[in-house]
Length: 181
Image (tube, rainbow, N blue to C red; front, side):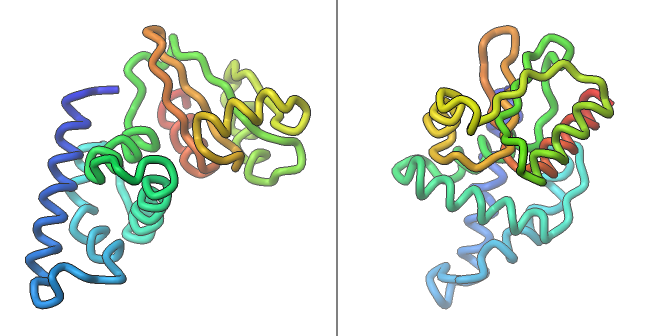
């Protein structure tokens, strides 16, 4: 992933945190609805950095998801760097899409997985399908990488071996269509 883009997103997160703390100075930054405030603040600048249009509700969902994942996977990590990685993983364009290896972790009865597989079929992409119920090794790989077995998840491996794990069917479909459509 683009290191400079990650630095910019991380810095934007820090600036957002400072602005939020200033806005809620009377409560020392305490705000149970912080994702709503952050989404409004981030909508335009984050969209420009990632070259896409975000709705506020989409950002609220992504911010909450990043927060849950950080708490579960890396609670001691720098929040702004973790969030930058989260947004890069979900929304940043690929550096070498034609050379990337794609693997979809899924299972047959999952409607969200069907949505991702339909996009793969529609675009005529070569994607390795790994059914997490047909082979427990695939489920174990997914849990080791993501900390949970929720599917679908698209694993994108660049030619230099860098891996990117993209959960959420809507993000996967949007990424595939924007990158390969």
